[in-house]
Length: 562
Ligand SMILES: *[C@@H]1O[C@H](CO)[C@@H](O)[C@H](O)[C@H]1NC(C)=O
Ligand SMILES: *[C@@H]1O[C@H](CO)[C@@H](O)[C@H](O)[C@H]1NC(C)=O
Ligand SMILES: *[C@@H]1O[C@H](CO)[C@@H](O)[C@H](O)[C@H]1NC(C)=O
Ligand SMILES: *[C@@H]1O[C@H](CO)[C@@H](O)[C@H](O)[C@H]1NC(C)=O
Image 1 (cartoon, rainbow, N blue to C red):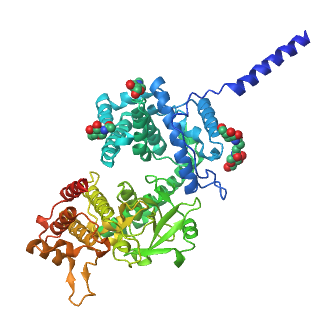
Image 2: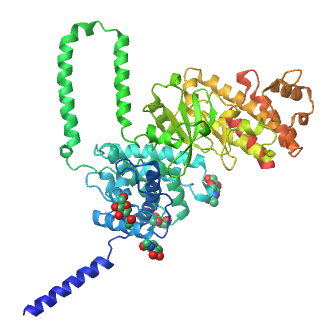
Image 3: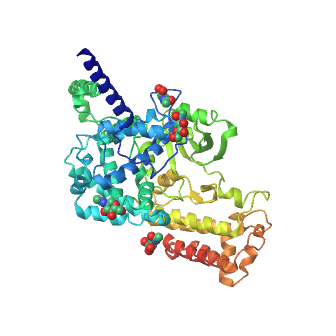
């Protein structure tokens, strides 16, 4: 009798073991969207605060998991995984990518369902919350995101429609969206729902993710939604502090009521500015709170630039010096350290706003620091600025006519995007060779984004855009000639603009102006067209200057001829 009991137990244990080994509950298929994580996902220095390297490693490793969830949602309509399955899928994914330790990414916290958020039920409920009209509108705005046909304009329209839908989703969710975590759940659900509607087209799913992935504000380490808010000790402490502050304020108010009555309007304004600044500072407590921008500590920035060593210096602008920085992951960035006297008010708010304006021909802001020093961290453009190529010494490599044309079109695209940005139309205000950077493929990227906003706010909007057009015309002339705006070296100082105007109006030889370093290797017709465009841009009367749309079309037509 006892023997059979033991035998039974033995069988039971065997079955359990078999179960543990063979049956993972994970129903995700990771084969369709492979990813090989590159960097280190663990921070060896300190466990509490994630480094940028860990952030970007986890961030990009997470994407294929979501793409696998899209495939599953297409078949089952479910978006998120139940906690056991989420655990199993994370483990399985780690098993596939065993060269990278993904344990700190805590993927299961992102991909498991939350009971408190209506967005997280399934595809059908997301569509119900959204309304079929808006859903169709979103799908049609994003329809052309096929990888082979991917363009920024298509992505831009898709992003705008996605943001509108997300807002509708949050409103439809009946106030159940709690904080940034709740927002994130809805943003994820919306992306998965959209992509699952045509899961058969891998190219479209990838295009949709390329375009919308950055819209989701992941944070590391992930914050769990709290079942009961009061369970959070932090919150309780905050409430207690707030209560005591209210009491203190009441007492202070009683004491100073008399004096307050005489407080000027200005003082009251100052007070509200202070409150606003405090809010911004509190927002910045979370290193990823502002559109995925990273907040660098003073230490990280100092180490990356070798303590702002002169050997790291790569340029100097109106606001401050620019350094090259090397992050622990090996990634190179450009760091602008704002001069002491130039410190900006409303710095963080400004950067958050600028970070939302993304385009391949605008230098991307990666992050900033605001403690101790103010600095801005940008993507690094390995080929430096355009002045170095056009006005630099003769030993520098020469850029060909085709490359110059591509650069001109790139700048025009960036400027057109700024001038027509539906979020907020804006002018750059300072287009010049040193503000045009070139990446490893010699693609043009317009820099000094924060500067433009500060300068242009005070000016008349149209005036500044026309001013941008004028300055773009000068850049075109410099691309044609490789010369300074005003040549002081010759005996008779001659303005480039006047020279070009004279040639066009009096019918001189355009080719006499061509950069000698081109060695005659340019297409005469396109040269003429670009020269003519430059002269139009630099017309003295603002109203006669073409807008960026017209200019861009003209340049693109020229390109088609080459
Ligand atoms: C990692 O995975 C590969 C392929 O899945 C396998 O060949 C290799 O043995 C694994 N390495 C370790 C350390 O588990
Ligand atoms: C991954 O890193 C964590 C520390 O962050 C460590 O505890 C764990 O053992 C590591 N796992 C593997 C498989 O190396
Ligand atoms: C790319 O988009 C254009 C315009 O929307 C469309 O006419 C064309 O058929 C698309 N090409 C592919 C390969 O889908
Ligand atoms: C799943 O994907 C297929 C292929 O793209 C699509 O035709 C179908 O409508 C999708 N199913 C759902 C329920 O969205």
